[in-house]
Image 1 (cartoon, rainbow, N blue to C red):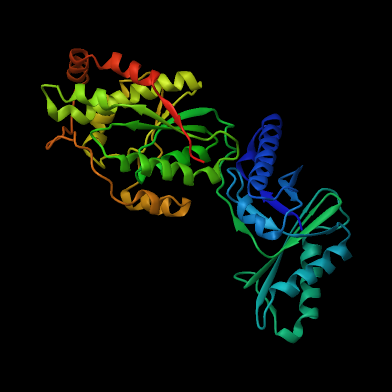
Image 2 (cartoon, rainbow, N blue to C red; image 1 turned 180 degrees about the vertical axis):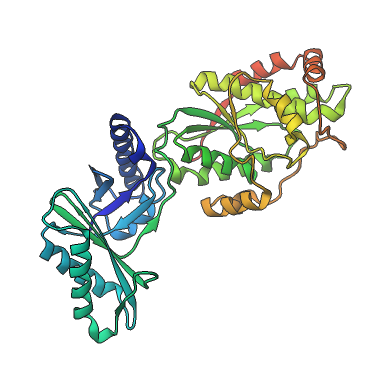
Length: 386
């Protein structure tokens, strides 16, 4: 029983780019399935679909989690002869239709065949009605209880009645690399996941502010990043950690404590930029949402961006907290990231909601933060997640 992996954006690309993305998607589907224990999985490309052989229907749930897959469809396979198509459609309906159910046949005929989609719909629909009239089934083309999907492609046909929704997006790593500021709270895993969905290979970077945060901060980040491995269809996904305690100690010597969070965040950006150069990444990803906290006002985001020369991507910028939490639940990180950890001890009682670049740069020069950030970037370590 093959599984059809359907995509959408890939189909809009030029011929060369489309073929490249299809090959990458097929390879990543095979890797993900084999990681899940389906060692016989083998994907092949057809126009508009990736066909996955050697797996049971329940493997569709794994296929659906591969970035680029819009639908994973467990199906039955037959030849492209119209009689064979209709016969298998009747068999699939037998396992799907219950007493009194309504149904619709949704056919799609690709390539040169002596019949069209309407011929398949009429003949298969009539055959199903006749075969199961004792069950009181009926046709409903608007809102059927059961939809029988039929796809005829070249010499084969695929018939199905169940579709598993996929995550969509583009194949992982097809759009370059980025470093993600990964605190392990609710926001940063969602921002990381959304960036991965757009085809970016992501390196999560945790900023270790010990002793100004507790050990629970790191443990939470490790758990959150570990839970995301199931979405990564390549080897080597890890959490990285940069020491920041000595930088925080220097920041707390500032004569203007209200700018502590701005100085801290700009230091994180600088460390991430240095790490990005090492990883040949082209952007920094953050979980910032406009206006959520004092450092995320538009004025302060403007000042933060000036700390680095590379793009800062903010996938959550227009989402509120409830929307972010709902997305975290969908991807499976909410329960790991929502529990409370010991708060940062360096946060001032009245953090600045506005700042000026000139003022912040003068403070950074006074404190020597740029050199300290370079020192921190050289001490980044890779943490074992498995």
